[in-house]
Every structure is written in C-alpha cells, then in structure tokens.
Image 1 (cartoon, rainbow, N blue to C red):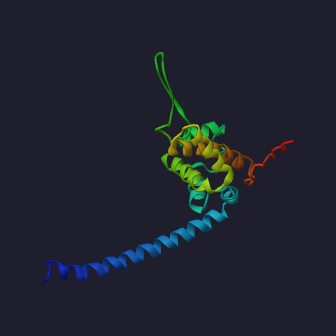
Image 2: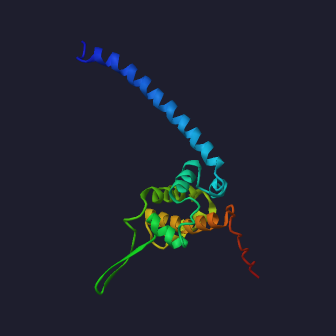
Image 3: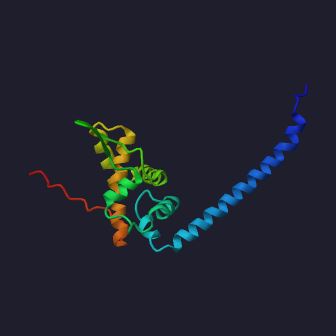
Length: 175
C-alpha cells in the first residue's frame, strides 16, 4: 500500500535536510565569530570570570549595557533590566513588591539565565536556598539572585575587576 504524497516526501525531505545542514553550519560559524569578537573586547574577561556567565551571556550583556557607564548606580541598571522589584500604589493603597513587567527583556533574560546557571556556585546556591527557605518560589528566588548578581556585575564593570569569591568567615569553634 502506498500513501499519497510519498513521492513528494522523497524529493522534499533530502532538500530540507541539506538546508538544515547549511543553517547549522552557518550558526556554528556565527558562534565562532561572536566568540572572537567577544574575546577582543576589554571587558569580556571581567564578565566571564563570574560564575554562570558564559560567552553568549557576556556578549548579550555587553551589547545591551556596554561598560555600564550610562547608569548612575546598580539600582538604575536593575531597573533598566527589569529585575528591580516594583511597588504598586494607587491613592492610599500600596500593594507590596512585585516583579517588574517593564525593562529590557533581553537583558533580563540574560541575568535570569546567568543566575540559573550560577546555582552550581556555592555562594549563589546558598543565597538561592536562603530565599527558598523564606518561602519564595523558584522564579522569585532566581530573580532575587539575579538582582543581587546585577549589583556585583555593575561593580565589576565599573571598576574593571574580575570576580572574586567572597571570603568565607570561619565559624568559631564551640568551646
């Protein structure tokens, strides 16, 4: 039994597969070019030194904010990215802090994905676990982590310094 359209599929599918191979090869070539351009940027090493920030995320952050000199503070950067909490108020009614629905969506996504990738880092993981213990849901805890990391990224870009893991304060031994 022959299904109608089998002949057409036999001629179309190989061309689609060739087209897909071409697109994948172009994508790989573009990724290599982006990596080369990023490594030529003076702040690339600063960003990629932070856990959770890879080549693509660093490239996105640099494209969106550059050296962060356009922002007066990390608060301004967080508001621009849309990861700063927003208080909704109308008249005498004040409705707590909510996630922002505004901001640069591409930058917000980059910060969010970097925070998610940084969960393997012990410092980021302990902050995330602390927020979860406070009763925050997964996405809310990640946004809080992204907001905290935004402060660090801003300082790193402003001072052109590489990421340093915070010194762990030794706990005193029980007597």
